[in-house]
Image 1 (tube, rainbow, N blue to C red):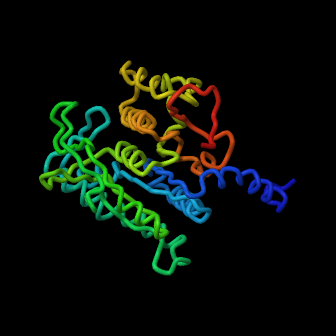
Image 2: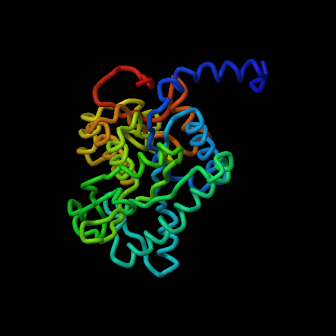
Length: 303
């Protein structure tokens, strides 16, 4: 039977119904990053996935980085990007570039795309762009655990009131990962870390991190070592081995922190796969790696 036939389409919608019912009225925090922010077809797929979630009664919150764009801007200004443990070394000039790119450009481009794809039905638009500085959403202190890496922030307080207000009014918040210190200093915060903090603060049903790999590998060189499910405790043990790729460290740390602090499920999924968000949220199998509070022995997606 043709996969585009009405019968097949109706069957797919029917299979998604339990998941729509389970997540209706709940919040899902999505860290938007990687190739899904660069490839035009993937951008549109992610935006449509997010809009579909909103239209069926789920409250999505997008948190984004923009590392490649920041690095490109730095090089154009004569600065070579430097990273320690997956975190960008951020001096005062780099902090200005980070804020200019993430808050002034990337954030507004995502908002514009969401509104162009779906906002017209709401008249005044659908998405609203924020940085972590707005309404003291993300408050931070300087990260000192990895040596002197400049104005890299460690979130010490989250004020989600503005997110609840926007979601209650039907808007999709889009948050750039720039935080504010008690003294007014801007801090560059890893977007995975920011998404985890927001997921905890709003009581999200899921945290989903979009990345450019299929998920978490015990050995990145061995594609058969993909981990489909791992507990927070096991994630901590794996992090302690020091064997993970640098870019995966903050992702797994973020997932572990989120489920340790009450988020039922955290997922690392392949954003290069079209409609990966819908596959994760609305199907039985899901994709990628799921981090859970305790051993389950299977992949329950309904919470």
